Length: 234
Image (cartoon, rainbow, N blue to C red; front, side, top):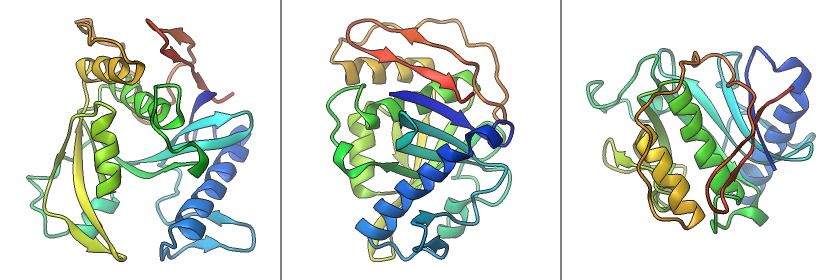
């Protein structure tokens, strides 16, 4: 499988990946979970909303031309989902800024939901998120998540914390979360997901990559049975 990062700067030749992601979202959120979402096309089987704009960045786990897992990142310097669903939270509690992005539409193909190793779509997606955060020198991710996703993220080695009390939304309990981002957390997540002992993270920092630009193309190999395959969508 391959990780692809798609945004406004490279979306034209990669629109088929965004369409595949929208179909996956429809299968999971509309057909399986029965979410009451405002925008979706049942005839074509796509799910989208008002946050699917040119400012969004998509991190996608692809099996060939099909997306089997993915996530959408939204800037917190403008309108974002957590701020709309939890308006009562103090702004001093919710981190925002150019170095904070919101994680939305975290979705995995139902047949691939198991979390056994970093080579599973869930593991690959979590590591890709952290790699993106470190490469772009982000401080935090924030997210509105369900309890089950909160537990899953904790199992991957993510350092998460609640920003407030749970709130029932569309029949399910949701929680506002904050993710810390660092090389140490990335290293620990790789180690946990690959079944290795945690090793010390390097002290040097990655070269900065603007948050609104795609990550540089790269193929890397890590210790043990952890293979990372991250590439810019061509």
